[in-house]
Image 1: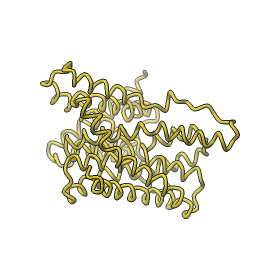
Image 2 (image 1 turned 90 degrees about the vertical axis):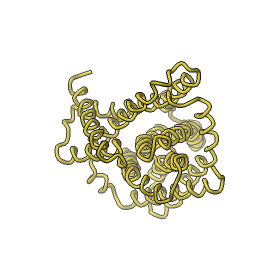
Image 3 (image 1 turned 60 degrees about the vertical axis):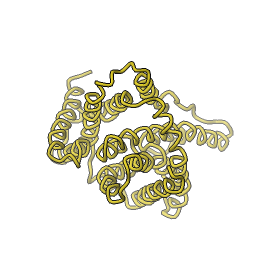
Image 4 (image 1 turned 30 degrees about the vertical axis):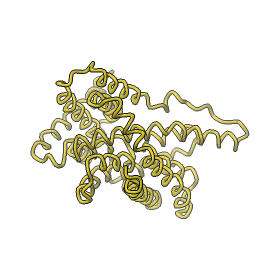
Length: 327
């Protein structure tokens, strides 16, 4: 690992430290939100050197995954499994809404099939990770991949800011908000950020729901691969499953198992929760440092329109399904 790598990682860590200080003065906003805002402001005023991007990319992905694994030490395995299975009807319902609406709305907006599929899968499952996984199967043009990621990411940023106030306005409980965030926000980083801003219980609940949702990328990619193989008479590209499987979820379950077995001292949990929140802020700071907001807005009206319609439909259907199922 080179000096520029550590410089990028350190930049994200410093922004997160400033965000933590700001959150002490305004706890309702929360360190993760401050982190992504400060990071984006730094990016707008003085972008980091290109050589530092490896460090910020590591922070935005691997550090976030480490934070999620750490949060598992504060949960029991029974809680994780119970929450995942108990919220599955809402999770599956919102995924169906996104996948059904994407081709219908995308076609009416005159967007090509690959872009419709990518934005739909990114909204339905887990943002950029789902887009990357599906891209490995359908091999879309690079421009469509960039457009879909920018579109989904734009609404991830918006969700971090608007979901907590809406949740308070609707008087959602911690568990209700966690389920809403976990099913209606696309990317894991934004789900975790919005959840923990609303409350620690909401953050833990949102994390479990989101990880359950993320595992569904596997059957989705498998289904798309089968359809593609049939369309091309068996001449398909080999799927890189090793890169598609979200392995960090297994470590999250191991952490929850260790907590359930009493291998992790309960007295350590508050400190570990604080460290996990800081690591989440480091990841959000890195995302902010990499985010060119004006460029996201210039993505294009039609992809942004598709993303907005799907996002609103999924958010509304999540709340409706919670009420219908009594989840």
